[in-house]
Length: 187
Image (cartoon, rainbow, N blue to C red; front, side):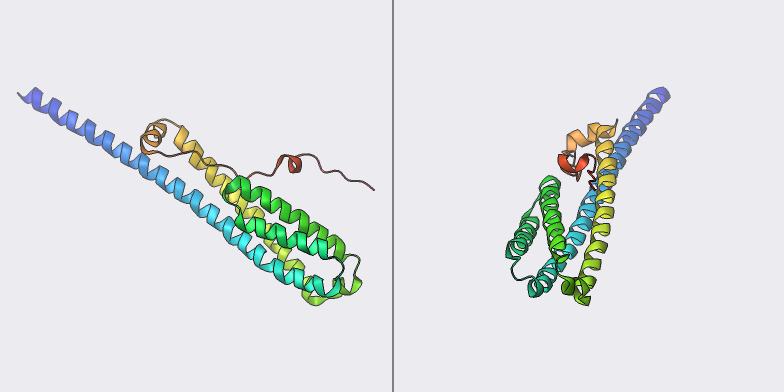
């Protein structure tokens, strides 16, 4: 009788331990998923900051470079596409188009000495450079959070809990193929 009671207590303790392990694992996955969501929100904040600077930059350039309409329209269109992008892959693609359009805008500004000397333009250009650094950091943080989360849902025993509760792997924020290659420098 005592042996049966001991076995019953051990069985209850084992079940309780298993339940605690499952709950702890589930909660850990939820925290990691929350970290990924938070990291994505940080990218979004930095991109919004960048997107908010662009209309001011375009207006400043417009006053000096009125016949560069195509370049200005390309920047505005790329900004609009970046604002509409959803998910890491689409967002990365749209942001890269915006970066290219901004490079063209800054190349145009080189032809206008008065524009380059304009204090407002210089401040906006500096703010944009600062935003780019913040975006790069936010992307790194997001990818680190995705790595931890994806590893978490793929390792034992968390993969069992993840499979039972619907946790899905997340996408990394990656540069498109053409930006991964070596930089071409020509003199």
